Image (cartoon, rainbow over all chains, first blue to last red; front, side):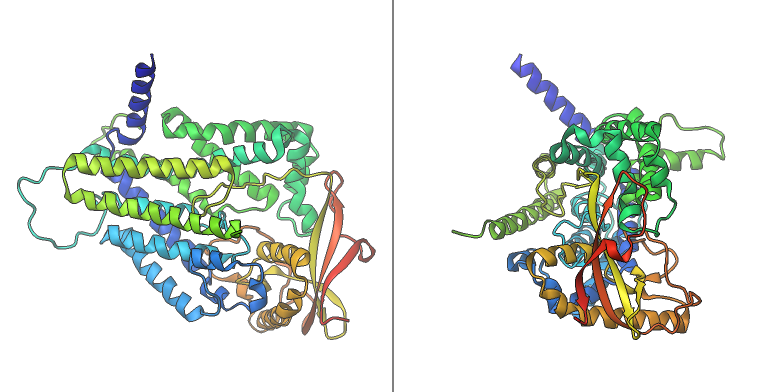
Length: 312
Length: 211
């Protein structure tokens, strides 16, 4: 009985992480992660935060500074770190020297991410580098540049060189998808452990919908938060939707049907949060990691001949 | 007795370094045999899944392994907020446009002000002159060029808390010479319609220059 359970667990583990995959899907993930990180990096003047007056850093422990290698007062050095990170990310984007470049980019973004919030928070989860750092480390250990990359001239391939096994293209993508799914799973778990089931009540959802309309009076984007909070139907539906969506998103790791429902639902979820709570989740573009790019590329290729590839 | 928070910091660093080293080991195993590579990848995947799940379940941050605290707070009907006002040369107050704080965000400054008020209120006096200079320069830039430092480029990644612009070149305040900054705390009831707190309904918690 115990052996059968163990075998089933091993089989499921193998199915999730080591089933055959497509090199183009992993290459697309490489491009999405790198392009997104570049976008966030060039959007912010992170380096200048190193030049904030000393008074801003009173609450930062020395061990935290060592943990992230952040020592205030060196905007020039940080500018250099930004530049090297940008070059490394560009190399990852085009698929040149990806293993080394991805690891360098990950190390530098690990350093720059917390600086973005000048260590007010040690967990800068909503700044755009959380999934990037983890994914870049994963990409550095993967065959993510076997497709959709700039070819650098190398020596002739050995005739005996066998193509890599197809599982090489599954585990890295699945890990990156896990990082995205954890956003919602731990969002659910955090609410449950901090506030209990009381969080998922219409009253509580209504209060969350209007929190920034109250904290920033007169500076609302849409006033939709108040519309939601004033409607028992909308707050009830919202509370149920958050419960089901945040708990259910993890199924996207093993279920194609879940991906088809949950990924568009996630986009709607973030649009709803933006319009009511005024919070833009910069990591929303990582949902593109769930798109079957290999199938999409096949559709575009085959369209000329009029035959569609099977499966999505 | 060692500071447990310091120990936790070092443990988190070690976990991240182990994550990177295992990735490096898996990458190097590509040169080896198939089973060797598979084993190295298996260890890396197991470590990553275990650590990332443990961090989330325990709800203890170990960034970049995040526990994703996504609006988990339970709100009572009555809650408090902070409002910043700039002061002009004539002593008159005006609401602050958060774009003037760039590259700081209001969310981060809000948290810093809350922490500082609890733990080290004197720190406000250290940073306030810098903040006021920054805001004054941003206002001058707006009046000169029509743009603020926080405007950046059209497709730049938005700040986490999206707030409509408040100051414009023709907002009737120009020339606005910013000379001071005041931070007020106010109480609001989330079950009632939102409203701007009247001067009598808010408490001054930080002021520069101090009166």
